Image (tube, rainbow, N blue to C red):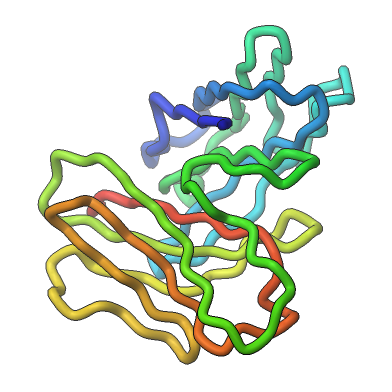
Length: 196
C-alpha cells in the first residue's frame, strides 16, 4: 500500500516570503503521479500542480514549483512571493498509474450500475472539532467536492446519492454511493481539516 505524509500543511498569511511545504510518500511503483491541492473554507479542493514520476524536471505552475526527489520519495511544494490569499490548508496526493490505494483501503469505484458502493476511510486526530470531506478526482487531476461532515454533528451528512457513515469514536468516515452509475467510476479521496 502507498502512504502519504505531510508534516506541514497550513500556510500562514504572510506576504513576500517563499513558503515550502513538505510531503513524503511510500510506494513500490515506478510510474505514478503526485499532486498538490489547496482546500478552500467551503471544502472545495483547488488543483495546484502535478508531477509525473517519470519526468526528471520539476513541475512549475506560475508561483508554484515542486521539489521532487524520487529516490527519497519526497515531494515538496514551494510558493514564491507568497500573498495573503495563499493562506490556507494544502494537501499532497499520490495516484498510482495502476490506481491502487493511498490512504483509504478502497478508492476506485468500478463502472457498475445500480449497486450501493461503500468506500472506507479512517483517520487520527487529537482535536474534538474538525471537518471531514470526500472528493472525486478527475483524470485531469481536478478534485470534485462530494460531501462534508462536521465532527460536532451527530447526524450523518447526505448529498443526493451520497451519504457518509461517520463514527467519531472509531475515527471512521465511510462514503456510500447509492444506485451507482457508470459516471461514478473513478478515484476518490477522503480528507481531514482542523478548524481554522
